[in-house]
Length: 240
Ligand code: ADP
Ligand code: MG
Image (cartoon, rainbow, N blue to C red; front, top):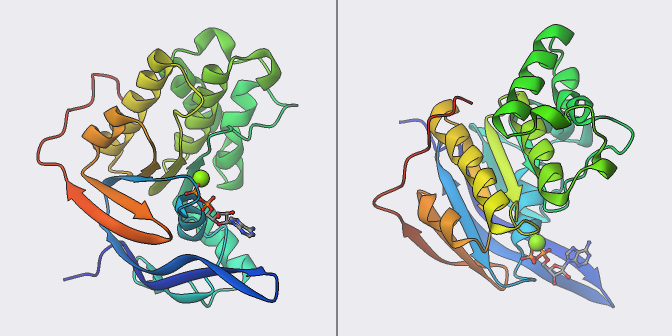
């Protein structure tokens, strides 16, 4: 049998602190199967974002093994990590990280440009995704002309436009009102179900925790518990 899609063994991340170091991730063992939707919960400062940065190849562990699709990543150099990132991952951050100079449509197109998708194809997909997220009449707006919830929907469309194998979301509904948050959750669930996108979501949102296949609790740099959901609610009618 093939090994799981993501395999972490003994992952540590330390930062320099005064004379010594402080460990933020402490010997984490974790496996994630392709197509899983996993919620990660835990107190502020417990290391969730640090873990996500390691998973997304934005950061490198101090020690331990991280295998992605059977390939050891911890020994790769910065260029190879950047390539892995482009090939495999889409990111949704709490604070959007949109480019202020570009329109909503322009922002959504960016990853597809890096992926080498032809202009007509990436533009029509970007427009379609924004439409599905209720943003048809906002595609020409710049981020500064959009509300927080609208900006987050642009960020989601951007992350899923190139159909990443893995979607990493850091508190994606944290800055949203509950109605906009539900819209974002529906999109994430639909993408996971229909495209089979492996999805990790750091979240305090109870609705997301109900929809995930597994909820992983984090405490003080370690995995403190895992709960599998027996029944998940299904995504709606929208095609992603
Ligand atoms: P969470 O996302 O669970 O709130 P983080 O992963 O952001 O937690 O941070 C975990 C701990 O690591 C915090 O105590 C934070 O201060 C520390 N930390 C994060 N990044 C750095 C850094 N670049 N240098 C030093 N300490 C850091
Ligand atoms: Mg965080």
